[in-house]
Image (cartoon, rainbow, N blue to C red; front, side, top):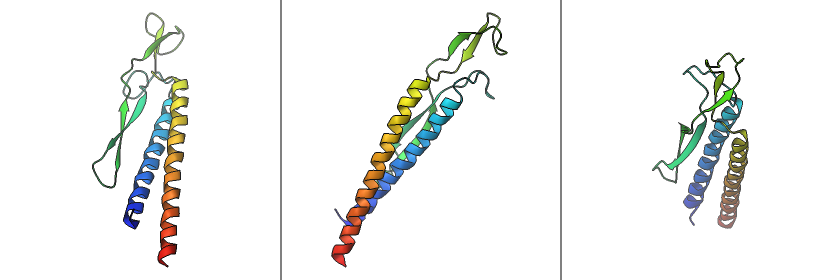
Amino acid sequence: MSIGGLSNSMHVAIGGMQAQMTRCGVIATNVANARTTRTPEGGAYRRKDVVFTDNGRPPGGVRVDVVEDPDPTRSEFNPRHPDANADGFVEMPNVDPAREMVDLVQTQNDFVANLAAVKTAQDMYDAAVDVLA
């Protein structure tokens, strides 16, 4: 691998870390809105998800899109809630806190893996510089 290849490896891993940081923020927003029944758009909060795709730019860049989860909201019987309908049901977000916690652990693991890749590339770069010096 050339020195330039090491630099590319670091860029890929750093891009992965940035993508995971975005995902972490989306998860935090989902958890914070797990009981939000009224949004500016109207209705209950809709869970957001993160989709990663290749952005087509070398070296291995990642495109991060935040999309709305298509899963349906759920109804909860709570006739005293200010957003209850005539039958006493409230439209609740499609957020499952347990799922968000699992996603958060996976996000952390992916971030740490990318961090390890950056460290390894940096160590290899430093070793190459030492050989050339």
